[in-house]
Image 1: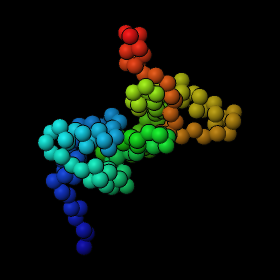
Image 2: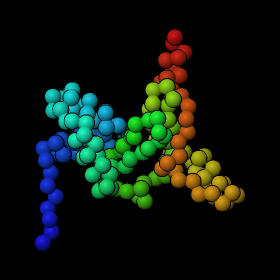
Image 3: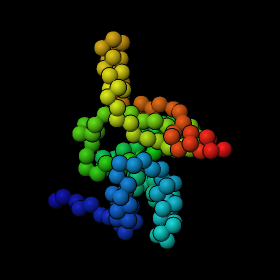
Image 4: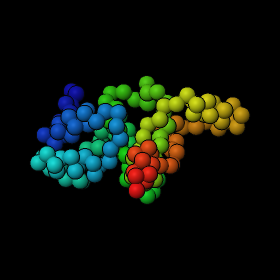
Length: 142
């Protein structure tokens, strides 16, 4: 007998929200704050528990950038990295934004590292640190 997956109201609310955020990064705190604003409060521990389960199920990708930043998540649905285009990440050191970057130039660097240095780069875990366009603009306005 196959055991059916049991879903709570909170799980359904979370999945609905995550489907709306597909392709964007978010933290567990972002999710908790969203539900607090909508008067459908879900506790932080519950958010983490459900996100970790969705990570294990392959529906959410978890990015741990460094020990100083909160883990970022991305809803990928039923897709997985094997089907996803290779992409790198940009991390703004001012606002903390994590940005997907799909760039052929970086794919060339990845190929160069493999060919000339025998090093295989993991594009899903490669992060470039700097300042995003919005933060640069804010700093110019000051």
